[in-house]
Amino acid sequence: MMTRLARLFMAFATLIALGLTVPQAMAQNGPLRIEITEGVVEPMPFALPQFVAETPDATLRAAELTRVIATDLIGTGLFREIPSDAHISRVASFGAPVQFADWKAINAQALITGAVSQDPGGRITVKFRVWDVFAGAELGQGMQFTATADGWRRLAHKVADQVYSRLTGESPYFDSRVVFVSETGPKNARAKRLAIMDYDGANVQYLTGSDAIVLAPRFSPTGDRVLYTSYETGAPRVHVLNVGDVQSRIFQANDGVMSFAPRFSPDGRVVVYSLTNGANTDIWAMDIASGATRRLTSAPSIETAPSFSPDGSRIVFESDRSGSQQLYVMPANGGEAQRISFGEGRYGTPVWSPRGDQIAFTKQNKGRFHIGVMRMDGSEERLLTASFLDESPSWSPNGRVVMFTRETQGAQGASALYSVDISGRNLRRVRTPAGASDPSWGPLQ
Image (cartoon, rainbow, N blue to C red; front, side):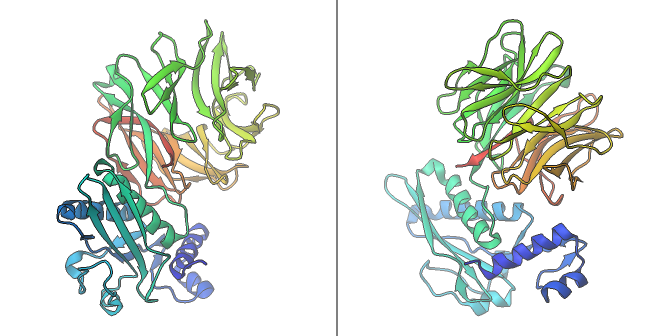
């Protein structure tokens, strides 16, 4: 059964989509406790007392876990934490009764309580509850997760995911990873290597060296493999890398051709990619198990950047067959393609939302680059960002957030990763140790 808070959030999301003002919202949905101004949601206030340390050696971990959970929620732009110095009640025991009047007094709409313990072997257990303060009731049931000591951040993300889902009614995305291209050195001689990190930029690990240029990594649906383009042999070739043992191999090695822009099918059994043979570039598909290939396009133009729909039935791609770079959709097995982009400027790097309802893209128009979204038929185009150079969008696992590359202007311009909500709100930079580009957001772990 949907909770009251979840119903509120769905109402707010609807208001954003409709662009309703406060008077319109009140007329259609009754008085709202969260202020909505020009289609922007006032973040929901929540209280998160530091989790109780149930064993002496869990005190530090309890504090760290609490902070990561809060940061996850605040980072969505949908929640606002009430600072601890405003708390009236103090949570000294996980099982203690909740004094709802004290949390109502500080206008906390949601309350999150929890406890952390660590066994002699170092394994950490976190348990938590989520409370609807004004209803005086628990949202869902209490849960607990356990992991080794070095997995404590994942525990925090898992808790935050549960809280997020219970309060919004949406699927989560915090316990996920992003593969990207790490960039170091001057712009005209920049070293590029594959790296992987938590969605928030923590726990960066490098998957390749910097001796060969790598581009456009793409996670498999299960997150265990990564496709990417490498210049290791001198010409661009599609490689596949096993994330677990960091072993890679050339995906296809036909002499005299260049392959690039690969992407997995939703079931992970097929890879689509662009292949240049002579002066023509087309989209091809390869069955991973058999190695059999088939050509999906045959126009005398450049076709690239293919991306499957979530159900695997269609592919969106970019092509200049109409004279300028535009977006097209065709059946997954090839066939007649329908153009879906008709606005001013050029469109590229399309990627289908996990929800199946929208396509994100890069748009170049009047000297500016944008990340935008449109319906799968090209309708309801909306631009989410604008800058000197924004490109390479990638969806969060729940289709709520888009991560992309932004490059600053000038000879010393650097690339960085940013994320933005599909409403165009909450633009944020993602922390990375160095320059970064070409993000691919993996599945929920």
